Image (cartoon, rainbow, N blue to C red; front, top):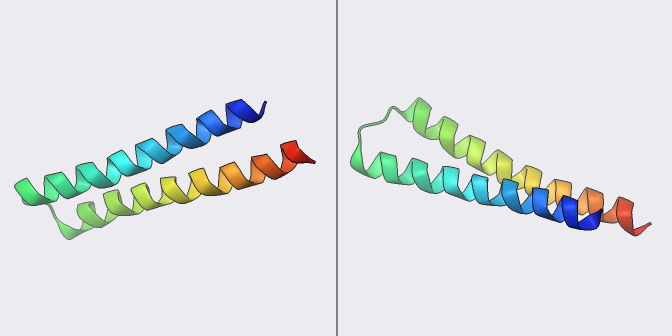
Length: 64
C-alpha cells in the first residue's frame, strides 16, 4: 500500500517538474503572454506541492 502512494507522488512530482520546464522552454523560444506563463508555472508548483503533501500524509497514515 505504501508503495502505491509513493508511486503516485513520484508521478505528480515528475509531471510538475516537466510542466515548469516546458513552460520555461516555450517562454524562451516563443512569445507567450504573461497570463499563460504564470498559469503554467503555477500549475507546476501546485503539482509539486501536492506531491509532497500527498507523500507526507499517506506515509503518516500507513505508518500508524
